[in-house]
Image (cartoon, rainbow, N blue to C red):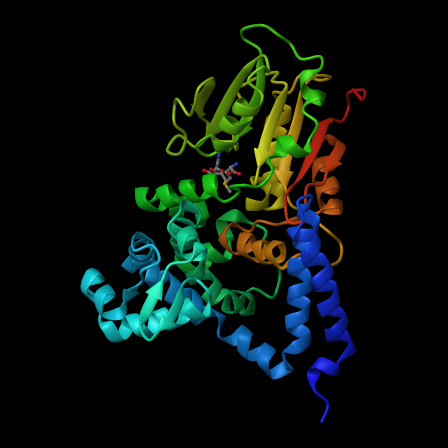
Length: 401
Ligand SMILES: C[S@@+](CC[C@H](N)C(=O)[O-])C[C@H]1O[C@@H](n2cnc3c(N)ncnc32)[C@H](O)[C@@H]1O
C-alpha cells in the first residue's frame, strides 16, 4: 500500500514549509514569509486530506461557528482567562454560567478541537493565547457582531439566488440581507445601540498590530506643497467610524499642518474623537461640505456598496475637491486576478450579502474611478492580505506628479 507520505507533493510541501517557517521565525522575518507559510500549510492540508475528508471539513463548519457564538454568550472565555493556567472544570463553568454541565462539555469539545483553549484532563479547560484574543475587542465584539449581522442572510443566500436568476445584487436597498431579514447592514446596525457598539469596537480593533495606510503610502506626497494656515484641512476621514485611523495618523504624524476631520453618520461619530481631531456627522450620499481638503480618505467604505452608489459617493467628494490640490485616498482590497486569498474572496460574498457590496480587482477599481471622473495616480500594495492604498485626482486636472 502506498502511504500518503510517499506522495512527492506532500514531501516537497513539507520541505517548503520547513524553509518558510525558518524565515518566519528569523529576526528579520517579513509579512510575506508569514503569509506564504500559512498558504503552504493550507496547501499541505488539502494535499493530505482525502477528498471525502475535505467535504466533511466544509460541511461541518457552520456548527463550529454556532457553538463559538454560544460560548461567547455564556462568557466562558473570560472565566478561563481569569484562572490563568489553572483551568476550570465543566462543573465549575456550569455553576458560574448557569448553563447545563452536559451542554458545556459538548460546546467546549468544539472549542478545544478548534484550538481555542487546551484540555489535558477530562472536562477541564485551560486558557491559551487564542483564548485570550477571544476576550479582546476583536474576538469579544467581532464574533457576535459579524455572526448576528451575517448568518441569517448567509443561511438563505442559496434561496435568494434561486429566486433572483443568479445575478449579483446591484442595489443596496435590494440586497440579499434586505430580502432575508428586511434591512441591509447599516439600518440593522443603527437599530440597536448594542449592535452598533459591537460593530464600532470591531472596526477599531480588527487591524490591531497590522500596518496602517500611512505605513504603506508615502505621506510626503500629501505633506509636500500642503497649505499651511489655521483653516486649511489636511485630511478628512470619510466614514471613519469612531476615528481610530485618524488617532493613529495623528500619533504618527503630529507635525502635519492643517485640520483632521472625522466624518460618519451622526449616530456613529463622536464630536471629540481624539486630540486634534474634529468629529462631524455627515452622510457621504450628500455633497461633501468640507471644501478643498488636501485629502479625502476612505477605508473599507467602497466595498460596502454597489458601483452606482460608489460613483455617487465619489462624485459628492469630487464636488469639494480643489483641482490640482485635493486627492482621494482609498484603502481597500485590490483583488488579484488569480489566487485571491480565501479571506478576501469570503469578504466579497459577505459584502454582497449584507449590502450588495463588492471587493474589487484593479480593473474594477480603474473602471469605477474613471467613470466617476477620477484618474488613479498610484496604487500601493501592502503586505499580502492587507488592503492596498489607491490615490486618485480629478481627471481634468493636469497631473501633479
Ligand atoms: C466598514 S465600516 C469602515 C469604518 C472605517 N473606515 C474603518 O475602516 O475602520 C463603514 C463605515 O461607513 C459608515 N457609513 C455607512 N453609511 C454611511 C453614510 N451614508 N455616510 C457616512 N458614513 C457612513 C459606517 O457607519 C461605518 O463606520
